[in-house]
Image (tube, rainbow, N blue to C red):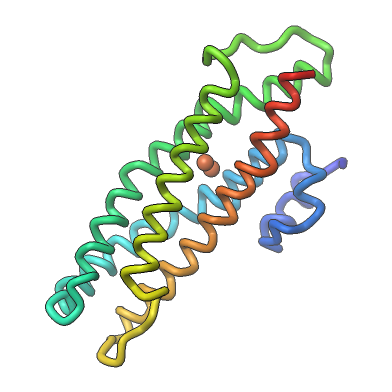
Length: 190
Ligand SMILES: [Fe+2]
Ligand SMILES: [Fe+2]
């Protein structure tokens, strides 16, 4: 698939990860798509969620003590996942892009910063599992982001945003686990 920066923008705007188009992207394009669509979304929404969770803990924590646990889980997520996406952007994605170029140009494979390509991929998948579990716990504690009767607007907005955030995270993780990583491993085998 020949994709121009413009059509990549369109894909990002459509936010359609089930689209066949994603499956047809080159690995380099897919890495760029993930960064532009999901890593940026993640970084953009973290400060808002952190601030609002602090706020609703102060106001509603007494009636809804589960909010403190949700906030702590989210803080743990932020601590670990910001490092996770950085590792992808600095190490893994550029390496995958290098592999793909080497294959296209029939040139020698790039020098690997890893013992084996599957090492960082296994590590990323494990980290994805941890975050899935963390968000399962958040979802459980909030009774699937249920808005209680006594909630204020901030409470409601925060839980709705957190729910969207979890959905985006699942799409992001599936894209890496089910499309990007298997294709990268395939490339190495070739
Ligand atoms: Fe990612
Ligand atoms: Fe990831």
